[in-house]
Length: 199
Image (cartoon, rainbow, N blue to C red; front, side, top):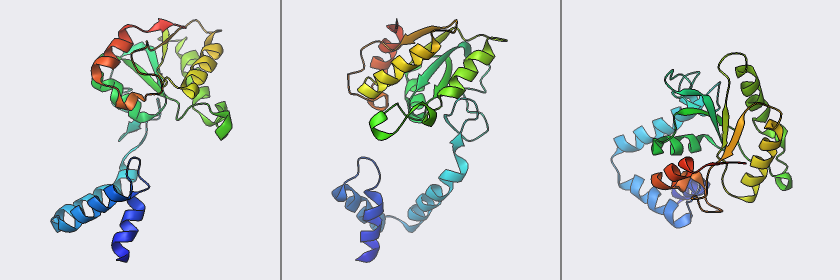
């Protein structure tokens, strides 16, 4: 049936969904109440128009500034640098960190053609240097994933920040090598923040 096959084909483009899982979802939608299917379709339709990137840090937001950037109680002397917006959500769930964030939008990967110009590195440097005139950034935590690309990106950022009067730290081991922040449990994340070290 073409309608089912078309839906399955679209669903398999989502991360972690193979053909069998996509078929189960399609059949579940066929069995579900029509109101549920319509509500799901409406939420998917409005997702891209409702959620955009924070003008300050690059995380997901419904307003110009995300909840973290607009929260005056956050410690504005620390910036945690992450790869993707979902990493902010993961770290926030640990309730261990109270500073600001900066989302790079990816990692350096010369083999895939991702250089510094494709990431939000210039904006990070600008945020740090502008802050020196008001509330200076004292620490930059590099919370990139412990992969080859993550380590390469962290070392590149450390080199760039050597001229600035900021302390550069990296999350402590505790997050497994090759793992993603998105899948780390809260306790592991909390211990990683407590045990971070200067690069």
